[in-house]
Image 1 (cartoon, rainbow, N blue to C red):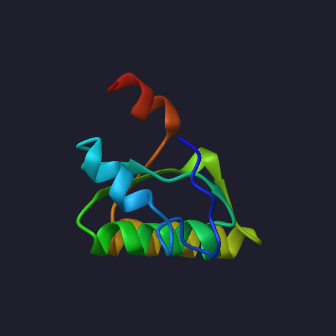
Image 2 (image 1 turned 135 degrees about the vertical axis):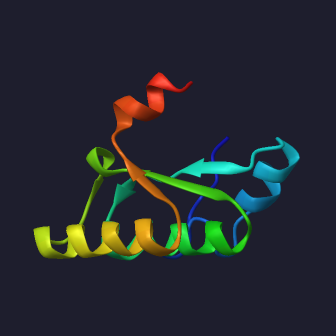
Image 3 (image 1 turned 90 degrees about the vertical axis):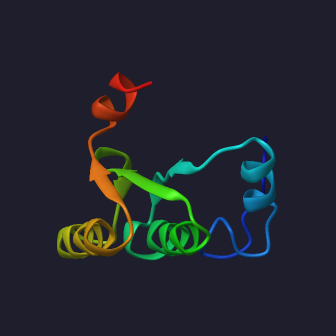
Length: 92
């Protein structure tokens, strides 16, 4: 599936939630840039829509190291799990 993203969050004014629900998915792995803007926004929306949120720390990048660590801390503390991509792949 290709779902064009129009704003910071992959869920905002897109069919992402509809497609995931039709596929029966209950968790999302969020990757990309920029961690402290787009990744965070997508994680927030996913969490509030009821998804289990997983972020592989080695597959996201922020505008700087301080922003990277504080955003990953925020996501892990409030919205989901932060892990490494190899741990996610091992569970597939």
